[in-house]
Amino acid sequence: MRRTLHFAALSVLALAIAGTAVAQDEFQKPGAAIQGPVPDQNPGALPAPSPDLEYRQVPIPDRNRIMDALGVPDQALNPYQQSTLKGDRPVYGEDWYVAVSSVLDTLYEPRTVPVPTNVVSTNRQLTNDQFGRPRQTFFAETLIPTFSIIKGDTTFKPPELEFTVTPAVKFTHLGVDELGIADVNPAKGRNRNSGFIGFQEAFIDYHLRNVSDRYDFDSVRVGIQPMNADFRGFLFQDQQLGVRLFGDRANNRFQYNLAYFRRIEKDTNSGFNDLSKPLRRDNILLANLFVQDLPVTGFTTEFSVVENWNREAAFHYDSNGFQVRPAVFGFDAPHKYNVTYFGLNGDGHFGRINLTHSFYYALGNDSLNEISGKKANIRAFFLALEPSIDFDWLRIRGSFLYSSGDDNPGSGTETGFDAITENPQFAGADSSYWIREGIPFIGGGGVGLTGPNSLIPALRSSKDEGQSNFINPGLLLLGIGADIDLLPELRIALNANHLSFNNTKILEILRQQGHIRDDIGWDLSATANWRPFDTQNMIFRVSGAVLVPGDGFKDLLSSQSEDKLYYSVVLNLILAY
Image (cartoon, rainbow, N blue to C red):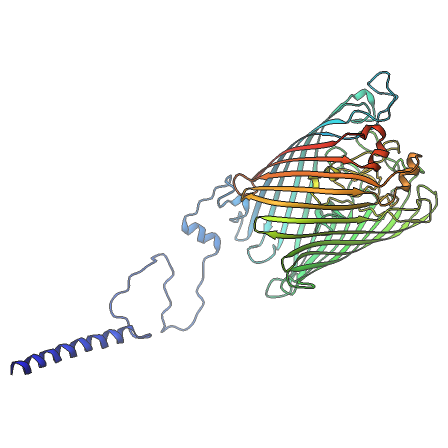
């Protein structure tokens, strides 16, 4: 009997437990009514819509009001926080913003550059050597603020309207060891101090239309604006006055530019736009198309046509009194030219191999060949390749560049390639001695073998103020380099380039000299970039470069280049807001 009662009690207890489990299981079923109050995890959130109500849209605060509701402060002078001056909050209505930025660039550069000596005004008695002492010191302080007014929430779509102005202030000091270098007037001595205020941007950008729900668009920009004709600044990179129609298609896979520019005269010592002078009679028409994932995914190909027609027939002197148009080169007479550049450029990767390439073919005519004194056709080409491969924190780069030279300067065809305004990011860029320093062509008149921040030995009077010259020796560059990320904030770049002329015939004619060999020499450089805060707001840059002269360079510079290394040291601090 006791066993029967004990079994009955256990059965009742088991049924009670089973009933409780069933009740709990019913409570947890999806869609089952929830018994009891549910704690509110976010009292400030919008309430969930009732399932009994019809579907309706619920307004969501915009990003500006969300920041206000979260209590995010507005810190105008702090570049790392939310700021109205950076366009994080509207200044008028709901979609008018301002964006303010500024760059302060301080540069100090001791260097040696081969320089000519004016025997009439030499400051060294009892000397008549055509080569002067090469030491120079250069200092520059540059302030570039940018002010923009923008209409439209640009988080996901292009701005509807934008006004941008970028004034630029620059002070420079140049100290040299010879007279007639800093200024054409020897009485002004061996030092030159110069200050200038220019405008590098002043444009209106108007959004014409959207052509898809992914914000593919067409826009037009009018005024002084930056433009780069290719990925690496080989042909035309500048801030000039123009009008540009641009946009994209197919979810940004296709991007296009159609632009016309009329060049502004430059200040000689700062390189900034000088609006106090009449516009140059130098015109540029540009059309290009970028296609992403062509020919493979991860590679972008650019097709371009650039027309440059120059009608500058008057004499022009730079701010230091030197004649720059026409160049003191052969027949010292004004001339006009038309040239069309057909370009094929690319940037991206094929698997692990990165590749940037650039090809241009120049086709046109020149009203005066400065050597023959007759009209001439222009037929020249340019090719550059930079393959690279990454190994974690290390990138190994190769560099190849071929710029065609003129092998018959007095013929009816000019075959030396020249750009419009080059600013190359290649083979070490402005850390390279050859690219950074403008090397004069001593004994050949008022032209330079190269200009500052240039690759091509174009024999131009000035990269900024002179005309293109398609009678030049051309260049062959073979190089290797490495980018080494030692720390997230510290990068070291090393470059070694061998340089040679493609044809020295024009050099022999201008120098009235016998055979000049083609070996320019070795250009070796190293650069350290340190970003102490892991951002672009402060950058310390130190670079050093040397040119080890080859036989051709020694032929041009006679005994001065024997057993001599030319060097450049750059100390640079950039502060950005």
